[in-house]
Length: 620
Image (cartoon, rainbow, N blue to C red; front, side, top):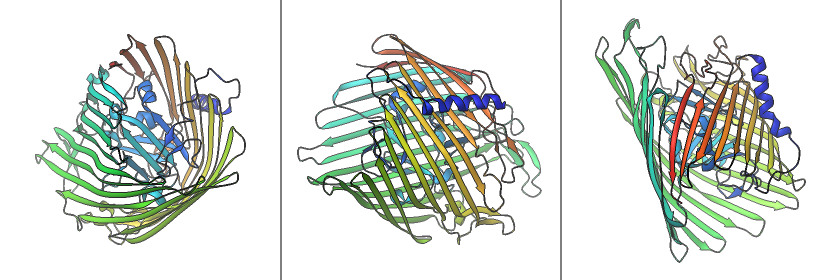
C-alpha cells in the first residue's frame, strides 16, 4: 500500500479522538453507559473501569455485517489479526503485540482454547450467534490465570429478555457461492429468560495457496447452535445454563513430502479439517445476604480437529487432535460498604488430550484462588487483584495487579496500572513426541499502563500508553531441536480510540502505534505491524442506512529475522441496509471495494472484492 494511503487512513482514524464541538441530538453514546464484567468480574460501566475496554454490541454487529468473527476485531485499538487465508482457516489474534496464545478467549465465562496448540480457534466463532463482545486490553492473569498476558476477549451468546417469544431469522448469500441461513427465538417472563438459535454458513472460499496443493477453491462450512436459559425463584436464587456448539469442515492446500528425503511428492487430492468447537455451562447464583452473592458453575469446552489428506503417493493420512477442558468456578461478590467492592473465588480446570498422537502426558489440572478489591478514597479509585495458581506440571505461580483512577472533571478520567502475568506451556511444547521439553517454565510478563478517557455528550475518546516486558518466551531452539525458554521481548505502544453516536450518525475509530521487539535479536516480532488503524462510519435515514469501514496496516515481517516483508495495505468496505417493514430488513455489503491484493500471513491468499446480501426478519 502506498504511504499516502496509509497516512490518510491514520488521519481518518485519529479524527474523532481529536474532535471537539457541539453535542449531537439527545441520544447518548452507546459505549458510555454499557456495563461490562470482563475487566474485574464485577459489573462496571466502561467509564468506571480502570482498564482499557472496547465493547461491541449486537446492534453494532448487525450494522457492520461481518462474514467472519475477525471482521469485528481487526484494527480495533490494540488488536491485530493474522489469517492463513479467509473463511475458517487458522487465525491468530495479537493483543498489544503479544502472541496469539497470550489472549484468553471466554465464551459466557467458559475458558476456550486448544490445550495442544495453546491458542483459541477464533476462526470458528459464528458472528450470528453473538450478542456482545468485550475486549479488555492489558494483563488479566491475576484474575483469570494463565493465557491473559495481552488481554481477554469475552464472547456472550444471544440473550432473551422479558416479553413474549419473538422469532428472528435470516437468509443470505454472495461471492464465492456463500450461503447463510439461521433462525432463533428469544423471550422471557418475570422469572425466566431464554434464547435458542441455529445458523449455517457455507462457502466455496478461495484458493488458499498458489504454490501448494491444487488450484481449486478451499471451502468452509459451519453449523452452529446457541442456547441460553435462566430461571429466578422467588427466593432470589437463579439457575442458569448456556451452550455454543459449532461443527463443520475447513478445506486447505497440502503437498505430500517424502518421509526420508522430505522431497515434494506433489499435491494431495484433498485436504481438510473436520472440527468441533464448543462451550457449555450450568450454574446457580445465590443471594446469601443483601450484600453478598455467590455463584457456582461447572463448564466444559471442546476444541477438536481431524486433519485428513486424501490421495497422494501414499494414499493420504488422518490425524486427530481432541482437547477438552472441564472447569469449576466459585465466585463471591460482596459489597463492603458504599465505596468498597470485593470479588473473590476459585477457578479449577483440567485439560485432557486425546487423538492419534501419543503424548507423554495427556492431562493436567490447574487450581487458582483469586481476589479483586476496589475502593474509593476521596477522589481516587483504587483497585487491586491477587491470584495464586497451582499447576500439576510447573507448580505454583502468584500474580498481581494494582490500578488507580481519578475523575479530574465530569468529562475527564485518568487511570494507571501495573500488573504481572504468565502463560503456561502447551501440551505441544511439553510433551509432543520427539519435540517437547518437559522442563519448560511459564512465560512471565510485567506491564505498566497510563490512560485517560474523555466523555462529553455523544463523544468519547480514550488514550492509553503501555509497556510490557516479557521474559522466558518459549521459542524453538535449533541447536537443542526443541522449544526452550530463551527469548525476551519488550512491547510498548500507544492506543487511541474515539467515537460519536446519535440517532443519525454513528462512528468509531482507533489507532495503534506499536513497537514490539525481540530483545535477543533486536528484530521486530513477526506479524506485528507498527501502525494499525480503523474507521467505521454509518448514517441512518428514515428507512435507509449507509456505512463504510476503512482498515489499514503498515508493513510487518513474516519471519523472526525480518527478511520476509509483509506489505502494508488499506481496505475499504461499504454497506447498506433498508428497512422494508418494521420486521423485515434487507442488507448488502461490499468488502475490499478497490480489490486490493494483500496478505496477513506469508504465502496465504486473501479475498479480492466480494459482495454479500442478507434478508433479516425480527418479530416485533
